[in-house]
Image (tube, rainbow, N blue to C red; front, side, top):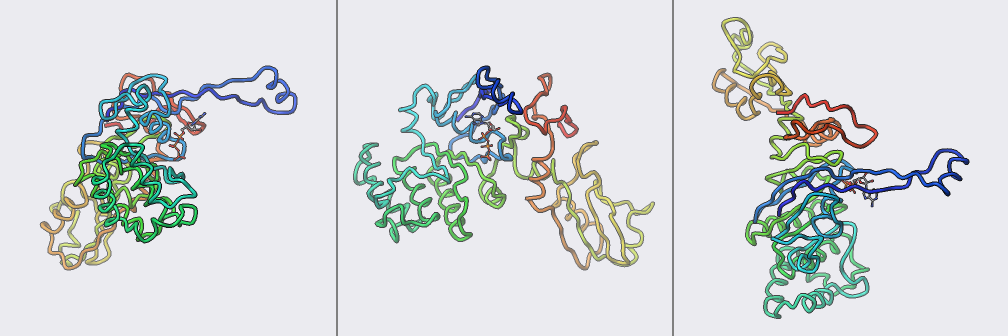
Length: 363
Ligand SMILES: Nc1ncnc2c1ncn2[C@@H]1O[C@H](COP(=O)(O)OP(=O)(O)OP(=O)(O)O)[C@@H](O)[C@H]1O
């Protein structure tokens, strides 16, 4: 799946303030252009799962709508399994499966198993294949407990599990999941994640996932694209997001008392990239020397720091405190960052909160 410079602009009508403004807007509507997605490019290979992350209104759904062929981009291009989705909608529909957590593609008044049979006929899936696939999905998602119940009577978690099966029954190479586990309990969430991992690792499907659930990201995504105000601000791993937006960790260590007293003084230098946060007798707290990693070399990862501390000191007790992933994501969403490779292009972005480009962390 390839997105190249995808951009989508919406024209909306804005009401002028006050009564006279409202009346004037009736005869002379004020139109405004809003760029929901701007110059978005990424590639996802076969058997890869990419999480598209970003705050509300960032442009994730608009991007997915272009990749699923629901919306045509204003400019740029997309290819999904070799097909331009908004031009070859029917061919694209055969190549993709989609689950939008809030909606269902199942027939509300039919049991899910009957919906599966209708989809089998629509896509022309041979009966044997259909049965095998359904058995695989049932073994992972435990569908047979409720697939003979009408969809309108299913719980949310049961319904979305049926939706996942319905989306994959025609064996699509590419799958789009827009907040698939929203509102599910922790047990069902984990079941769905195991199912998705299986689909990616064993079946080689390409998955594009959006979620606001940070645990989901940590469990599933080797790679994330972070989008804010319609632009990509980071394409990398969760570890990179942590490094850029939340490089704060603390190592609490109890050292040999003599070493603890000397740590950080002249002649007893700290490990590179490590700073002494505080010292209380033999108990010492270390942190990264340069939490933002903005100057010079990147700070050590928490694992590198741990190793360096253990190698340098006689440690009798050790505890690690890392920033909660939610804090990291909050920092990422609030930062008015520029995109990674934006050099030379304009720094304008939409939204009331937009500030002039503050690309301190651009690396
Ligand atoms: N049909 C439309 N007409 C006008 N503006 C739109 C339309 N669809 C989306 N937008 C605007 O585009 C921006 C991006 O919306 P989008 O739904 O893609 O965000 P999102 O990242 O999916 O958000 P969420 O996490 O809340 O689902 C928003 O400011 C939204 O108001």
